[in-house]
Image (tube, rainbow, N blue to C red; front, side, top):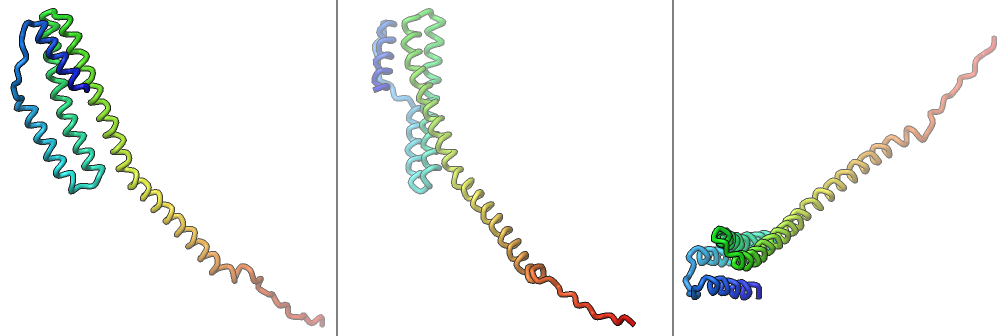
Length: 162
């Protein structure tokens, strides 16, 4: 739906300029889409988080390409003082920037989740180390307890009072 609105806005921009839209394949975008397809194919052999992060990276490259195009077109429209076109392009640019921010948030969440198992493992390893140390102290104390619990009997020898 967002893409359809952007196409409508671009058509309106062209109409304001007295131009008619014509389809022309974009080699740059085609390359980015092809790269994204490769990422998806390779992602099937990876674990979930790395595959998802790679896919997000491919999607962000597409977003950045679109952001660049809208920014350039908007700047040209500003130079030519076409305020209606600037307004239309600004809306599409804001949508693309918002999509990029959402992808960033998802990527950050995935990265923190991907790091969590390692953190949990470190905590568990530390707990095991503490348990082993406590057990070693207890064993050491138990070994020394017989000597501590049984008081040594001191026998007195009777002294002769001569």
